[in-house]
Length: 206
Image (tube, rainbow, N blue to C red; front, side, top):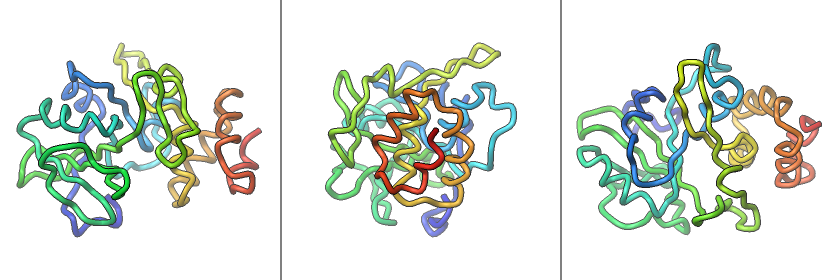
């Protein structure tokens, strides 16, 4: 990942390969990050908006042990505050900013997946920065259906943009300018209400 080269090289897994890897997993998962926005814009991914440096997997933090069980030969490391710590057991602690799990096929392999952890329960996705913000799962995780018949779950664009809105990087600005005009009215309204009234992206929301 950009800015974390000291933590080792990345060779991001392709979305199709990640879906195959997670086939049959006993937990809810979805594509997150920039690729989630790409899937909302074009399920066929014929012409991506920009280069993507990693592949983000979304799942609930309480499902990290199940992810490890599903990928028994993979290494999982907790990423927090620029430091990686080998995951041993238990649920990553939100109060210690343990919101990412880097995954690689083995100790000598490059990092392949950045698992971004979300909060939620059986019925709702819950925003970890403000638990008043929540969405039913069928609105929070959508399904991209490509012409080839592949179905990929992905984080709803208004939620992904909300995550990106805290510290706006150049790529986040590109994503916002390309995706916000495409949002359905209800999703745009939700994002507008979730963002601070003075946020730089408010003028993009029609």
